Length: 99
Image: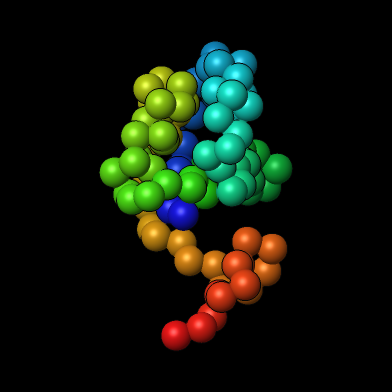
């Protein structure tokens, strides 16, 4: 899994409004690709998105991210990606934490 921390740009709020329906339709159509997806909030305002995407490698995960209408619309100004290996909790498998 790959964790994408996506921060909105200066016009994020306006662009989200314009592309929200297409984004939600995309996420719904590709729900099996996501471990979790949702907005990042600060003081009640959406400031970005957190997406944990299931993929074989970072290139495949990035391709899934780049297919999102928010990506092509420029909603996100900055995107950080990290490999995510759950060790505890609902997403951790039976062998999690073993070395």
